[in-house]
Length: 372
Image (cartoon, rainbow, N blue to C red; front, top):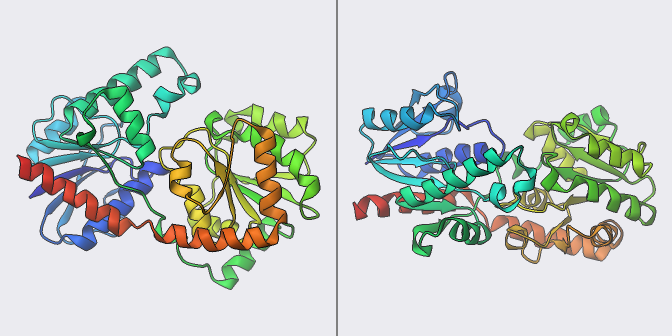
């Protein structure tokens, strides 16, 4: 069995986490299949870091979502004599001749088109997702909520879509050393209780309502409570900073931009609560990462987030500032509830496993090739 996995998005946030952990999981489970990873030039070492001896790489310079990939990826699969091509994002060229599996993580561009830059971007996303779902022999997705969206927007049979859950990256699963915690505390001057948000700053992440909710909840929380926002591209969304000024929170909201996993895990551990009021997620890894690090979680009651969080988080209406504020108040002030959320969250995070995800993905590969 020879399988080509497109790993060009290895360093992306969500999809990159998926690719890296899938490679590691497959490498631990399967030592006989010939796995070929399509990587950007220079990425071979990173891609093979957790892979087995039965993995090799091929440089692929075509950029994701480009016209060039429409013919180069099928050509690379043909030259490799692939039995199966796995595309871990929603683009699958109609020129592909071998069996195919595509992972569609979410349908955010179709559910929330108002956040796309143009009508053309919406039409592209709709066409690519629909074409990929219909072309593929199997569609993988990461939650039942995403599966419902895929069925709604593509019209494929439910039997064609298989849910395989994500999990927490191993870098977030172990407690950091005391020296590391002290170093991060000193570097960022974390000498106060804080509520944490981790993720990008795009509009659907709902940062403006989060800031308004924090303004309402802060007087009822511990003395000196702050909001810490970790996410890049803040400068691209000035309305977030404007919300801070509007609510007179300049001294109480701190933006730290992108942080590596070794630092981020300390923020999770030190936070009084983690708040993630996103309007839409295909899976939503940050709440699960927070749970794995024993932090009480407040998150949305929409899309996949209730499915991932279960009964281990406070679920709030992300469109209602008062609901988010109430969740923050309870998570930072009700100590018995905090301890219960920590206990439930720890147990919830253990239910998700990249080994299980890789096992189920490998079963899909074999099923597709067995059907051939």
